Length: 118
Image (cartoon, rainbow, N blue to C red; front, side, top):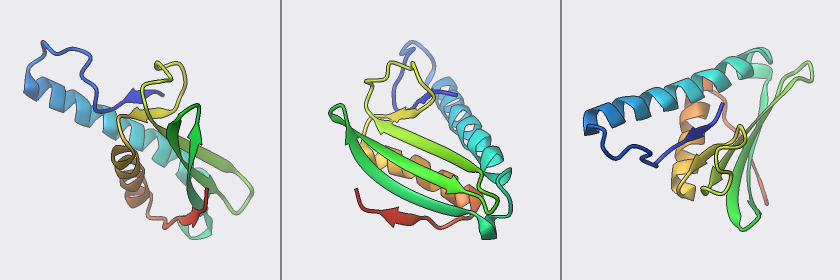
């Protein structure tokens, strides 16, 4: 699922409609990843690592979840418009938005990540 946050693709829409759609898109993104992470097993046995990196001139933030049985779920949020909605990464306009989005997911899942140096 691709989500492009902080970008208004239809400026003619009413502000309330845009905000409603924006909230819905975020909630769908979080819920999809939440379900995938929960399938890994109990949160007490799931390990999460959070890291940042530069790729093709822009910033990416990775949040990798590993379950006790070895299952993996990886989440990437890119701070750019470079992917042109051609992949499953979330895309936002800046690093603060990327970390906020990942923070919302981590809060929902209830797992504290280990921060990995880049």
